[in-house]
Image (cartoon, rainbow, N blue to C red):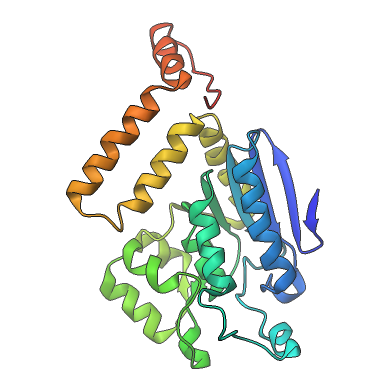
Length: 261
């Protein structure tokens, strides 16, 4: 099925795959695609049949960032009256998605496309792909959460160098930095990501959602506040039916079947 011509949506086994579908433009983000991605993430959050979201790109690219040609045709590239911008809302949509989000970086991820990958919970990369902030090459500053996530994911000195130079970072360096969870040959990338996605899809949905929320809140809280947050959260999780199912499965030496309640 499709959200629009610009975004393909496929459901299988609790995994919803969103494919950016503007291959002729290296899946650069225009208004239609931006709106479709944000709506798809919201829909996935609300859909009990969806356990995991995978985002990838059609053709040879993951996402080339903002489609400047499309924006300049409108005559407005950056709306000064919008204090967050669609790029900010894109980052929040990924973080606020109630399901784990995996970025399958099949090709170049640049600018806001880099931000799209960074805001995902897990990242896997094709061996020939690369990422780049790239903004300084256009005399611009980062957006889409790039300058927020990058220094939190890799050593700040390395992050600063990548941001200030705008250079390409290939898959090997991304793996060395710990920026991605794995690098695979391009032909097998989606198969490998599917294995990870299905493993997560078989997990306890409530615990996964709460764990994701805790991890993101930890970036903004001091230790004492976060320890209290953890304690409150685990008490909530302990009330779910999935906890009893996990205990019974352990005692019966079988795999648990989680229902998300």
